[in-house]
Length: 115
Image (cartoon, rainbow, N blue to C red):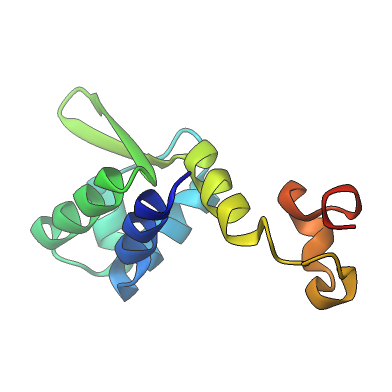
């Protein structure tokens, strides 16, 4: 991941409705959810939800596919992991105590890479 991709992803997440939708889709798993269900669950008008989902998809945080008349969305776990790794790759600066438990959560900041 590069700076531009990270900025795009973070900008997409920097809205309460988009963040809520993304978190919901992360919980939903790889099978995703239909856009209408997401809109209903978050009490967001479907047209506005479509705009938000498209923004997240352009930032590569979601993927979508058609299932008959429905459009399903799911979190792009690989891209999410890349963003998290990018954000944490230099978290320790050689001092594991700076990161605390974060050092154990992401492979970008393990005792081998941060020591």
